[in-house]
Length: 347
Image (tube, rainbow, N blue to C red; front, side, top):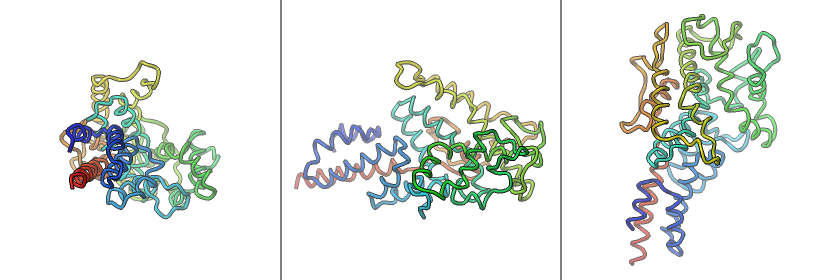
């Protein structure tokens, strides 16, 4: 393989790989396939989640099926529910993208990805209880009573009420309405659920960090199950909300794109992550910080760009989640196709 192409693949510079292969691959089926794979890898690195299903459908490969599991279905009643059924695949992909963006020395993209990781963290915590990743097709069977109503006994602010209501009927209408829900409401669902998890029948004031609105009069559905399970959910939700309000996430809000200033440096990211990690690891009054549990699951890698990020995601999820290998697997396939194409060219 050409040394420059090999270097680009090692650095996961798939956009540049596409440009090189486009000039070289005319008439060579292996190089043409390598180019298609490189286009797919670039779009996945960009976390173009709306089109993950479309991207994966063009390839018959194990990574394509994993990508489908990380996608949001384009149709409201699509039988393949992807990230609505389980957020595990999407988080594995985001953790992988975070690592590759750091490898490519792209600080702004590292910050953007760290911010995206926070978007669905409370939903990830609730997945153990709901049995799904906040799928609007199944929310009616998971919640009830004052959820999504105008009841004055519900402490949800107006945005959370709107999200809760939309989550109950987002899959009842057409594609336009369903897509609008995904675009504007779905990422807020976890924060609405967080209020329900942090109720006064489960944890009393002062036991744990104050991280947001709590519910003094919880619905019966919110306090189903044994108290230890509810307290575990409360702890994982509070850890998720602590991350959302952290220094590393705040960097995203101070990093405007296209204004020639405000792009964070690597040292600023390191400082922000250190401050974030110290806050996440702070002891809680009742000693229940999930990061301190002896059995906290962990699938982190030794060279993790933000050390502890996979441990945090796993602690919030209540199960081990680490960086996936979708993009890296595609990179290996590109390399194999290029080698096959070069052999074909010499034959």
